[in-house]
Image (cartoon, rainbow, N blue to C red; front, side, top):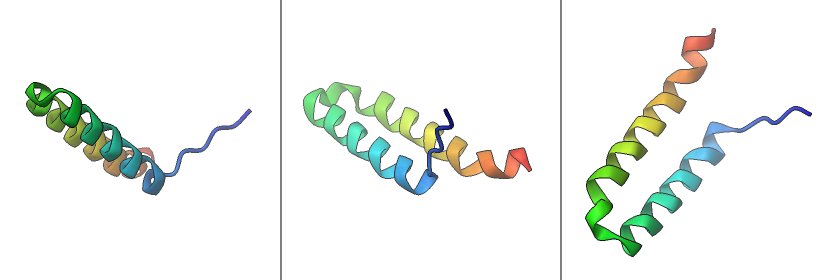
Amino acid sequence: MNIQVDIALLQPVIALIAGILILLAPQLLNYVVAIYLIVVGATGLWPRLLG
């Protein structure tokens, strides 16, 4: 079974989850933003690191 995740699909899903977490628990804002930036940066660099 091959699962292929498109980065163009992954980033809006991550942003949606981050937005919901911030609405539910505003005190998590710093952590949610930091994790979001790390994930988006890693997914942006991932194709360039592999080849």
